[in-house]
Image (cartoon, rainbow, N blue to C red; front, top):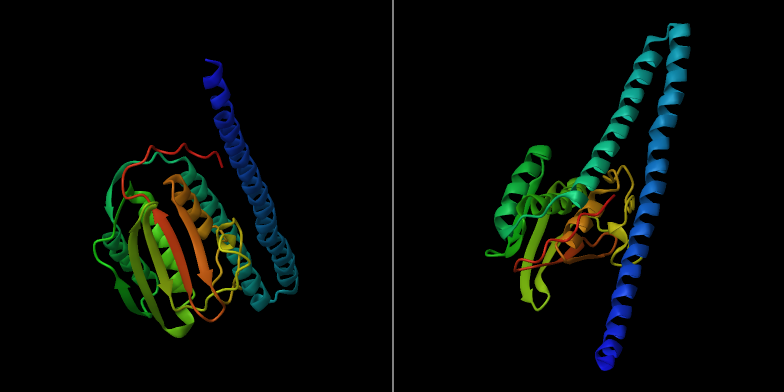
Length: 259
């Protein structure tokens, strides 16, 4: 009996260490989220305040051109705030959603997502090369959201070239299906392979297509909830590869994360 208790102690310590590491990671994520929200919401609020003052001056001076510009800028700043709030709600939703595991054909979801993206960017030529028969086990709705967030970046950061070149390949491994999504976009300079998936990490300028800073964080949450991993390989001007490890068989549903 004493021997069993002795052997159980290291296992208990390992579990405690793993739980502590998860807690620290969650606390770090929440701190980054709070800082990002406060920083990103202040910018459009300051803009609204400043443009409102200009609007008041334009009205007093009866300057119709200044009034029109100020109203447009106020509406743009309000739209940015609204888009950020929508992204935060989506980030929270994917962390709380109950996973419904089923076999999912990734090539079918890619075709679905590409149709949606073609509506948003109808002017772009698309060269898509997807390995057929890629199948995982997961929540179809969340996996579609995952692919949309990843491919949306390929479209955004290829728009300046007038065309999108994307290649998707997969390989079964002991850890699950390893999927690589590679594009020929503008790429990015990375500190490490996990950097792009931190909330509010923007590695591009607004002119280059940077968005709300939560798209890849949402993708990371979805992959993590499926018990998988996600990482990036990229250099500026040399395109980008996103790597995914996703389960090929049903896993026990991971608990929702309170974000």
